[in-house]
Amino acid sequence: MADLSTPTNDAQSEQTAESLITMTAKDGGNVDHAGAIIDHIDIWTTAIEQKSSAGRGSSNKFSLYGIKKLRELILELAVRGKLVPQASREARNSANYEPASVLLERIAAEKAQLVKEGKLKKQKPLPEIREDEKSFELPVGWEWVRLQDIIQISSGKNLTSKTMIHDGGVPVYGGNGIAGYHDTYNVSSSTLVIGRVGFYCGSVHITPDFAWVTDNAFITRFNEASLFIEFLYWLFKATDLSKNDSATAQPVISGSKVYPIVVAIPPTEEQHRIVAKVDELMSLCDALEAQTEASISAHQTLVETLLNALLLPQATANTASQCNVSLEPSFTNSFVKDWQRVAEHFDTLFTTAASIDTLKQTILQLAVMGKLVKQNPNDEPAAKLLERIAKEKVQQIKEGKIKKQKPLPAITDEEKPFELPQGWEWVRFGTLFKSFSNGLYKPAKFYTDDGVISLRMYNIQSGMIDFRGAKRVEVEPNELAQFLLEPNDLLINRVNSKELVGKTAIIPITEEPLVYESMNMRAKPFSEYLSAKYLNLFMMTGIVQESISTFAKEAIGQASINQGQVSSIKTPLPPLEEQNRIVAKVDELMTLCDQLKARLSDAQTTQLHLTDAIVEQVV
Image 1 (cartoon, helix red, strand yellow):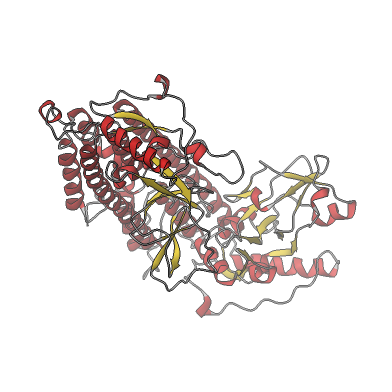
Image 2 (image 1 turned 30 degrees about the vertical axis):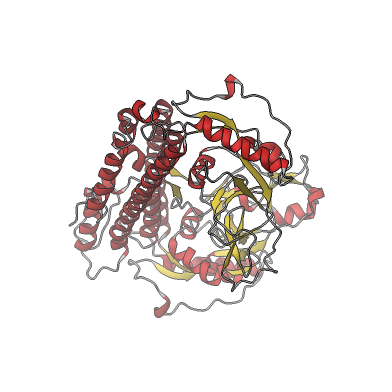
């Protein structure tokens, strides 16, 4: 078996990337700053920030925060003159050396000539740079300058998607880079483009020689003999060009916002050396990022492979042999070996939020397959429960308490996804419920602080009702009677994104009445004969999510399911006593998983803070 502590096949290339980072950082000439990069490679690659996810407890969305901060550190060192060595005293005394003050004089002279020729509008002088605007001590030969003194910006030209010639070969640049293609151009040389409006306000791109720049971006002009375009690109990347954007719903920057920004300019020759070093280090960051992502992906694949082995059909039963482990796996030697393989490497396997979520999903799946707790031959079989439910249903129909439902089709052997333990039965989900009802629709004006709580789709979270943000709605007595929720009712979300539609929760005991809005449906189980909590955890399993995904109808970015589709879901039903044992075991294991996840989150937060501290210390 592979070494589980190294879940990647690319360890050698990762070591190569780290050694290249080390060599190129040392080559920068500043040992202290090189050390910040070299000594903390492990922190850069392991500081991972979990992104909030709209999925069913999925934690597959993350950002490589450490490498992101490493990129920021590289740029910060670059624009402070700390990434490459400055010219030596001997070089500064040579006839060819030109400090930044000289190139700024040349730029000013060129601007004055353009104004004189009427090619450039004279700009209102900006105030002298104050001492408090100088954020660090300049290296020898560098100069502070406002952007107005070195660049001119102007908006591109409007070009909508409809008017683009999409099979043209000329790239069209908006605020976020290439937005399409056209058959003509409005810039004929490599151009620095700055996003000027919207989410990508302040983003920076360099066009090829021929391109079209739309009015969502600025075209930047400057003295190309004195300023290197790639240096300005990295300088603007390191500068918050949108910090002075207009405080509107749609962020916008203009010359009046950009021109006052203060930056540091190095000599032209040093600009080229800075760009070469930044390009080299950014490429190496790309390599580290790819290797880290590959390692995380390989780790998750390993976790899924080992856990999926627990879900495979077992060839032979071995009820006499039981393994004394926390999941209490049973029935086969094969299952026991698969679980022992996981248990032996538990601390190595479950080190990410995604791996813990996969474990939680596996626990649910094992639960409804009869592999989580031991069976007891003395339990009343599920077939007897179904007989009593059927009799109760007939009686309640006769008494007018519930409506007669359309018979659900029998489950064929071909439809059964796995073999059930003795005493269990396959049954359609709808068979286990008295009724299904869609929720209450009321216009916005009825939602007031004086109404009763109306549970919306946002109140269904991780199999439970979350009352945070709950809205109140004014209802008539007949509406309250019709849409009243009772303890052990199952609330099912029927309209949502495809990821979330079908999520469920059990209604708890509350001190005040609850109703539910129209995006949800209520299912009333025969709770005298069933564990509503078991039915709820079943609805959270992958097998149900796959079923819902196949029949959910999508329209305008949302998916919907109906009562008939939910009723048709194939459901593994254990004896009532085993349902209760399963629920207790799942609760116990989910608590342990949540504790594990909380410790992981604390560790990740510490890593993020440590990363920030390293950056602050260096710059």
